[in-house]
Each structure stands twice: as C-alpha cells, then as structure tokens.
Length: 516
Image (tube, rainbow, N blue to C red; front, side, top):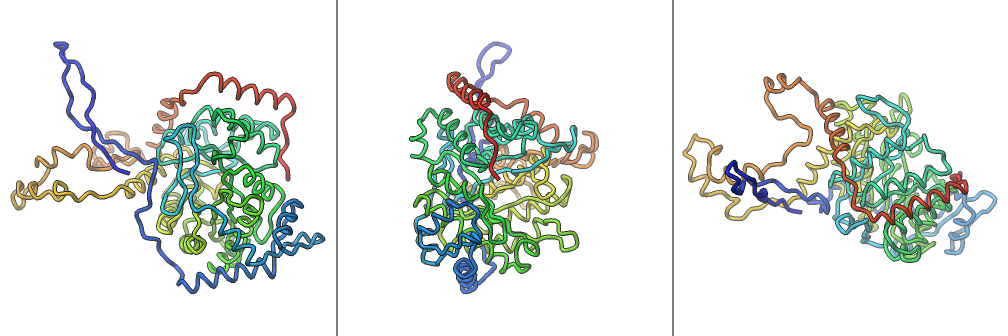
C-alpha cells in the first residue's frame, strides 16, 4: 500500500480562463493491508508445542459435547469415538492433523466489486467493526435497543471507511421479527455496500435464504456461489467443551457451501476457562481444533479461520474484561498457536467501558496492538464496541477509526530514496534554522503526514475559541455528516427488484425461526 499525490482539476478564474491548481492532494489506500511487524512471542516454542499437545489430549481423552446429531455422525465417520448417550465426542490427534492439513492457507473473499475483494492469509491485516451488540448508543439519541435503522446507519459508516474491510453485524435489529430479520438485514447490506456481508448461523433455512440473496445480488446461480467465497459467519463454541446445535449446523452449512467460517471459542479465564493464560489457551486451542475438524470433515478444503477471543473476567463481579495484560498475552499466544497450525486467524478487540472515554480508548488500543503484534489476519470488534459487546457506539466507531487508520498508515512502506534522505534540504537550512519554508517541505507538506479524522491538533486558545469540544463531541458531527454523505453503490435496478421480490415471497411464507 502506498500514498500518492495528485493535482486538482482545473478551476476557472474571473476572466473565464482555466487555471491549473497545482497543489497536491493526499491520497490513501487502506484496502489491502500487509502487517509490517514481526510476530511477537509470549511463550517459548517448547511451551507452544506443549499447549498444542495438551489440547490434542483434551480432545482425545476428555472430548467435546456435540449436541447436533449430524455433527456427531460426521465426527464418527472420520474415526472419532462417539457416545450417543452423553453426546460426547473424542477426537484422535490423527483426525485433527488431517483436518488442519486440509484447511486452506489463503482465502479470497469476493465482494460486489473487485476493489471490495479481501485476501485472508498469514501476513494480511483485515479490520472489522464491533458486532453482535443488542444496543446502539450515541450522544444525541442515547442508549437503546438496536433497530434496523441503527444497523443501516452503521453499515453506511462501515462502507465509507477503507480501513474497515468487511461488513459486520454491528447491532441486532430487534424491531424486526426473528423469522424475517435475516431477510431484511441481508437485503439492506447488499443494497448499502459492495463489501463482503455477514451471515448469522441460526439454522439451515435462514442460512440458505442468505445464500440465495447473495447469489441474486452478485448475478450468479446458487451453484456458482460455491465456486468462490462470498460471505462469512462467526461460530462461537460454548466453552468449556461444548458445541451447540446452531453453531455446529453453521459450521457444516458454511463448509458445504464453501463459505468462510470463523471458528472462535470465547474463553474468559476464571469463568468459562482455566484462570491461567496457558490453561485458557489450551482450552481455546482444543475447541478451535474441534470446530476446524468438523468443517474439514464436512468438506475438505472449506474456508475456515482459526479464531481466538481469550481474555479474563473481573474476579470481583464476574464481568468480562478486555484490553487487559491477560488479554494481550492471550492474543500473543494465540498467534503462536495459529502459526503452529500455519493457518490464517482472527483475534478480538473491544472494551468493557460503559462509555466512550479514556478507558474505552485504552482498552481497545491495547487489544488492537496485541492483535497486530501477534500477526492476526482478521481483527473483529476493532471499532465501536462498548460494555463488553452490549452496545455499539457511533462516536466510538469514529474515534476508533482514528486508531485503525493510523495502523493502516503503519502498513505503508517508509520511503528512503535519495529525495527522501533530504540532503539538499539539510544543506539549504542554516544551523539553528527551521525547515518550514525549505523547498523540500513546500513540495511535500500537503502529502507527507497523516491527516487526522477526529483528533484536534490546534493550540489551547484555538481549541477554546472553537467550543472546547472533546474528541467524543467532535465524533458526533463526523458520523452524522458521513451518514448524510453516503452514496450507495450503483446497482442494477433489476437486482434490487429481484432481492425485494425474494424477501417479500419468503416473508409471505412466514420466514423461518432461528434454531436453538
């Protein structure tokens, strides 16, 4: 990714003659990021191997409780020991190793246009907003149950930022009945953005509806959908050591359709996982391996990501905590385990703060730095997430974008050509002088530095005269303007009509309730 300077288009003078404004404009490209940092370690190589082997032992000797009969049948067919009375599945290490070897190392996600395609492989860096929140919140309308309008606005914000690479279920639209919610949400995503949409795994009928809508929007058949990867879902195990019916069904359905499944145990040390970082990662690793194995048993080579979202709880209240030292260490260790498997992987960000304050910023940035330094492929909950996922803040999405865009800038190679070394500029300025008016500065001052989204770099006097607004207050005006300015992709009206017709037909049929 590189920055490029361009010139502005001609403008007219009073005499009517065209005059070229030669002032350069800074251009950025945050769409395809490569992580520039060497992955950091928290464990020795021997310790990583011990965690891996202990996780295999957990699967073989203790097993996973798998509630879906079809999933148990697939595990049994692969050679696992299945107890139908207890629903326990014990998976041998050779079964796991065969599955891991079948999983792809590189996955191309197809968007509605080529510039929205996303590459997932070790070394790539993909940011995705917070997701799954029951509430939306902003400074003007307060905290409230999420609605379809809230989700639409947040998808518009996501669509407008190049450093948010795919769409996500920012809030749950609780004003739409469960049986048709998936239809309206997918229709909205496909109309608002060309970025890769998300799908909740809530049963085969709902998943199939989503696949049909995506096929309509992309102008392909249902069979052609399986030739590429067009959408994604996130699967959470029920730690400790349980895979419920909708999650197991989602793994199978997405694998068979050749769509991306992000298998993510949610292991909070001290609650649903052992209290030690190493113990929590051992459980996480075992559960992730079980999900990956089910995916590859359903369809060898199906796109799948190793998922991590390990942190700790507040032992006084039991509430989840994020951005903690334990969260950072767990993420660094997760990166080592993913590299042990040689698989692309996701990490989790977020904050436990109840409002968009210093705590929220600190926790989110600590979690994000951990993911970047651990070499994660995909960071979910990187923007907007509050209250441990109970609310999605419009203002926090904007202030977090400042952080993500700066991460994107760090992915930009630092140029060191002769002109960048600036010998002539150094020679031009006398000792004790300044470079403000140097020719080298005048040529580059509009393009050399990152331009802030929400930060205010003015002095105290200027800031006071402008109203003494905090970053949180400035963010309100930014999200409102960006939503107002959003331009949806140019879509064929016939496609929009076909989407509406499918949604109307399925709604008239009563839709389908999610499974539990």
